[in-house]
Image (tube, rainbow, N blue to C red; front, side):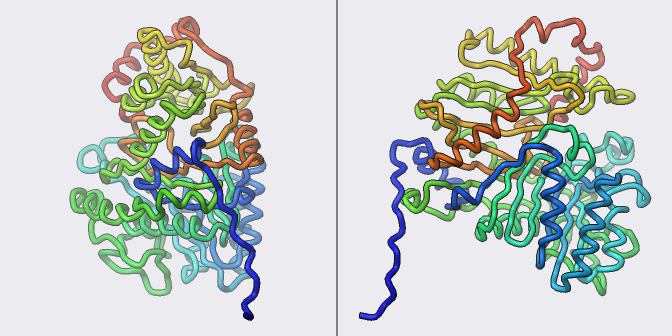
Amino acid sequence: MGGAFKKPQPVYNLKGTVPGALHKKLVDIAPSFPVKADSIRFLIEPKDFLEHILEGIKNAKKTIILSTLYLGTGPAEQQIINAITSALEENPELRVTFLFDYLRGTRGGKEKSSLGMVLPLVIKHGDRVDASFYHTPKLKGILKRLLPEAANEVVGVHHMKIYIFDDDLTLTGANLSDWYFVDRQDRYVCIKAEQKLRDYFVNVVKVVNSFSYLLNKNGDLILPGKVGVPDGQIGSSDQYTPYDPVTEDKSFIRYAFDRVLPLMSNNASESSFKDSDTWIYPMIQMGPAHVRHEEYVIDTILSVCRYKLAKIHMSSPYFNITDKLSGKIFNDTSADVHVLTASPSANGFFNAKNYFKHIPFGYNLLELDFYREILRRKQQHRVKVFEYSRRGWTFHSKGMWIKDFNGKTRATVIGSSNFSQRSADRDTEAQILISSNDRDLSQRMERDRRNNFDFAHQVDKYDLESIKRAPKVLVRLFVRRFRNYL
């Protein structure tokens, strides 16, 4: 007799629903994590993002992981460093891991760069702080010698935005830089106390660290797989590549592929959707290492949309979606598709110096190509293009929202990928699909969508063909020749 009474676990019937249809297809091709719907929340404003980062650092007792393209060098970024310094002094068991892109993270030298910002932490707390810098194997030889520092990141970067504070996980497209805290529209999802999902992304960072450079106390970037982890310092990976991405790129790529491959293994079954009404499916993309998992998952999502869904909203701030994705939108789904991108004035390169100022008009050319394809296929009733325009703000949001026939937002894709040619071919990317039948989470996903589309207006061929948007001849030629760098 004597056993304690156990409350029976609820059984969720997702059969015939959007989450059920997605789970049936995705469970075989992606890691799958059942989560509690109330563990998920979306931030709205850039200032909320900075406050969330600082609060996460303040409350962390054992783990801080910051994976991003770069850390800026202004007062707000110094706040982050100061907060980490205080957290390390107050919590002797705390370990801090940074993961940056090598090219962007070292731009400006030791005096004014991400490297320079974190070096004092490594010097003082090297037994509890490690900083890694991923270098693309695509930048090598004469190209590495010739490309100026301001432009070399076009070849490929580490682009994953993963922020972990103890058991809490945040995924976003936002970097740790001042304008991402003030007036740059982005998306942010915070997932609280979902241990298995959190552990998955801890492992993602650990894997990328294993084939990245490590910052030592002298301010030098070394390959631990060749020279070992320096005395008095820690490494965040249990093994490191013995191959240099610049001089041994082919061996490096094979090593990276073998390390990343297990991250894409499925871990659930089709029947398991009865365990929860809310599921999260991570996606990894690493084109230089021949890892194209995100593409495969997005293709599968759109194939499900063909029959099950009423409307898809998607966002890409730098409009250069792949031919494969365009083909899926035009050929493999009957759902309405609303695509959101930055207007030229909301593009982060608008009013930039030198040749960078022409970049928004290059993206406008690609946007016009897409719109002309809509017209050629006579699908303007179903596929529509919107631009974000808000005075004084730039636009950096990316992702997807999926509605069912009742107009309820049942799924969203959120993370670092722009769905662009370079995201597919050149950068490292991490994002997730959140799929849920929970009413409150559906409403939160819809509020997140509206937060991005509220400042959007629909555009047509005449807007995109405006003389004010016409790119220079050389810009036009560059876009046609080097599209997969954009």
